[in-house]
Image (tube, rainbow, N blue to C red; front, side, top):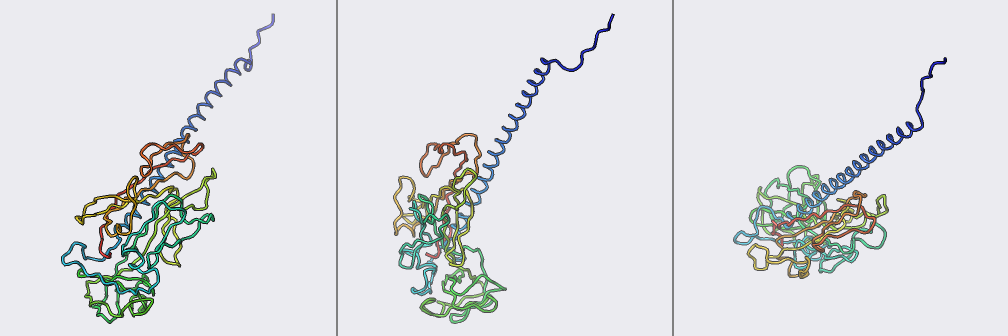
Length: 369
């Protein structure tokens, strides 16, 4: 009688069951991994988007709040502060006041047609700025641009000694802030003189203000200044949106917010990418009580005219940002209130996420107008 042999290995049925269980487990792992990856992409896209949005708003708001800053004088002191502009009317277009219609320190363009604009001394619009993507346009169509003037470099230098009307302006310490042709404000609590720098000496600390067709209308300051006077360089800066010329991995254009100072030697700087739209509204004080009475350039609101610019007391800035790469599993609707208050659905296949950033910024320093 032969002994029974022990079974070795697995039967076909057991192998099929084990394979099915393994595939089920693997599918679950892949599903969890895919869900985690989708969640990570969404969270990462939103976090970068929010960081970029906050940074862009902060940069614009900081410059708006410095627009027209004239030192310690207040726009509401009595008698009114003395603002003396010594810059020649024949100076280049970079002068601080004459380059704007009605001598304001803001100028904007509503719904660009493909280029952003500057203004020459006569208030004539000029197309400027680089063509980033080679399409012949310098700004993204339908977006706004905003130009701001003031001591936007945030550098204040105290004078190193009393300043007489015919003497040079000497600032404390070593400074590389000033160059020939710069427009400078010297101010104290009694008033401001604005002049063009005709010469720089003393390692950048001595500023001359000679008269000439391309500099100043007179050589002397309007009065002397004491040791409490400060000196600041005046800058004209434009914010606008343009195509970077780059594409994401899906072949979609990358649009960015740019900042350009009015200086031929300084190219436009890309501040934040993923900015698809830039809209600016202006709050006006029409009865001079310091309160906003009306908005311009917003949805359904009248368009700004030349006489409105001196009455601007607040600016509402709105930015529409998108993630650079796809961050959502499906097309994600978004709201963009400067255009409409109902959700907007992106085009088919556009999986980027979007968010609006908006701020109402008061014009704190209405001095130099």
